Length: 112
View 1: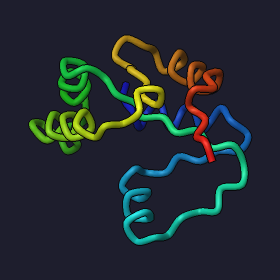
View 2: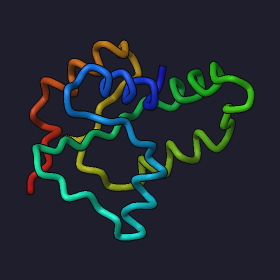
View 3: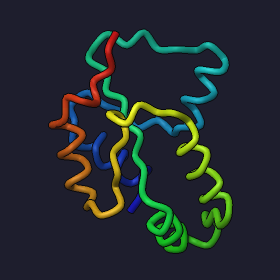
View 4: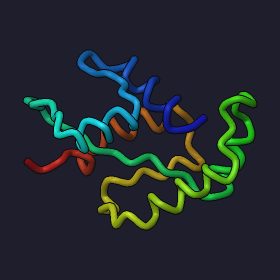
């Protein structure tokens, strides 16, 4: 189970939440359409190791398999210089563990 599954499950467990496709967020930022977040905002980059990315991609329905593009995206994120406090390695974690860690960890709270 990957980022989308974990994100949807997390959103289902919180009172005030939503799951927004990352491409939509990218388009919002590029287009300067930003929400006026008024509450605590957590920023989490869910990442897995390369082998896990390949394995998870192979388990997708055939029409959703990314193949080499999955590794290209993986490498693009590794090159982004993301503050490590916001990265959550999901390689060996269950969806439930991922959700609990996101909810409990204060390291993901973005400074305003």
